Image 1 (cartoon, rainbow, N blue to C red):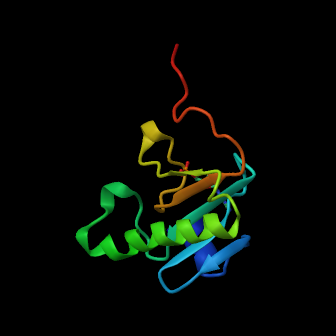
Image 2: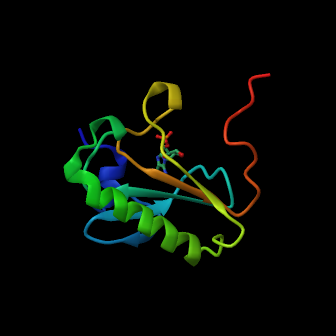
Length: 116
Ligand code: AMP
């Protein structure tokens, strides 16, 4: 069964799409954790980093180029931003369609929740 992201890419589910080409789609996260929270998703259905192969190298690189362009478009490139890729249960991955979170627009704090 297709993930919700596959349906968004196909135009079958609603989303605030900010960029789309033949390789990637980017849309605003439905539950934003920062003023700018965009998901950059390969159009090809790759469940997670665990399923990435060498054949995906070009699209994975393209996702970073799009992330940079969107950071400029959203005017967060000067102050800085964070890119996150969750993989699997311990990382809390919710949607098994590989994606990069682009987060910015405020100071984002420590990279990981402190345990002490
Ligand atoms: P992850 O935990 O890395 O798998 O992140 C999944 C992200 O997808 C979460 O931040 C969700 O808020 C977001 N999300 C889930 N469904 C949608 C949707 N229909 N449109 C936009 N973002 C979504």
